[in-house]
Length: 415
Image (cartoon, rainbow, N blue to C red; front, side):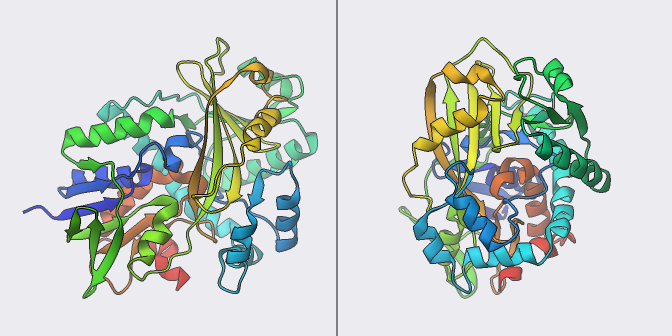
């Protein structure tokens, strides 16, 4: 009889994990929750080669506080979150401590090992399974309105790309407008990432779930109530009763902390919420996603012509109501780069919760003291980018292999 795995979470990390486990012979069931609610549905869609930080790296607590107090900052913290997470063992305290420890470069090397592998694995799944992903292989362009920021970032990326092995080209403003004619005259320069991919997250998540169903994976759009440990073995409780699979993988995004807490396990994963606004279709086209570097907005475009504008890193409860003023603010930040966005109506506005750890690395590993409980979460802003490589890593882990990188990602590091 095939070994049974239950995957809790239907985002890209959970679906890629289910895909790889099914490939090697496991019988897999995914409790996917609401596919249209999770962060994977509303993310920016870039499989990015230069994303070497999963959470914004802020040099010190005072700077973090100043940024969050600025109304025009893309980083914000809800007061209730700050009060809850500022204590000695709180998420914010750990976050600031990690930055001060000077581990940014070391973490970048860990993430880049996953980044470089993930691109090829994504292409393999999209093409082999015929996913309706609206795949765009034209790279991405990060553009700057401020010259000082452009000069600083371009020099940093030249050095970093040589060390970490990804490709980036530095362009002046005229060259940026040659490859993207909709860019404004205010753009002084940009960084072109030729190996980046773009997918339409809204379509890809449903298409991926359907592909898994065709292969025999049971994908259920329901939530798990809790996970309980009995004699070291994890059991899954749903409204229909209790299930006792051979393996339980918790990949529940920003709800991972809540799910694991029900099993008596503490992993510091919190919600770093992102905002998305989707416009009505436009006849004007961009050839690739545009990252507006000055305020960290990302603009992609669907095959139907809708622009998808995403931004913000808002530390908050996943259930908190959205700040609706932020949708228009994202447009205002993007218009100096892409004036075409100024008059388009929004047809969808959405907020979703990215799962973030305080040290900026995902948490992937077996829960110590259990026989069958695993976790793969905490990818924050790199969920889509890192998910394919994470799925492969999960399959190797469940098979009993221990790739070296698991030591860096282990949940034990938070003990």
